[in-house]
Length: 116
Length: 86
Image (tube, rainbow over all chains, first blue to last red):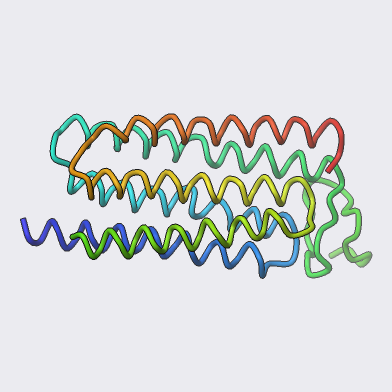
C-alpha cells in the first residue's frame, strides 16, 4: 500500500506541475498556435496524471472506473478541440509569429516572405 | 497524503490564476478560449484530487461532465471564430 501511495502522490504532483508550467507557457510563447500547443498539454498530460493518481487512491472500484472514463474522454476530446480551434484561428487569419517558417495550410498572413 | 493533496491543489490554484491572468490580458478570442480551457483542466484535476482528499467518489461525476463541457465550449468558440473572425 505504501508503494501505491507514493506512486499516486508522485503522479498527482507531476500533473499539477505540468499544469503550472503550461500556464507560464501561455504567457511566454509568441503566437496563438504556439500557445495552443502548450495549452493542450495540461488538458491531456496534466489531467491524465492527476486522474491516474486519484484512481490509484480511490476507495471503490466504481470511482476508479469513472476516473478512467474521464481520462479516456479527455484523451479523445482535447486533440479534437485543439485542432478545431487551430483551424478556426488560421481561417480567421490570426497572425503567425515571425519565427514560423512552414505553413502547410496556405499563405501565412504575417509570416516571412522567403519560402523554403 | 493530506500534505501531498494540499500541495497539488495549491499548485493547481496557481495554474488557474496564471491562466486567468492570460485571459484578462489583451489578446485574441482564441487566446482567451485557450486560457479558459486551462482553467477548466485545473478545475477537473483539482476535483479529482479533492475526491481523494475527502475519501468520497461523489465529485467524480462533476469532473466527467466538466471535461465534456470544456470540449463543447472550445468547439463552440472555434465555430464562432471561424465564422466571424478572431
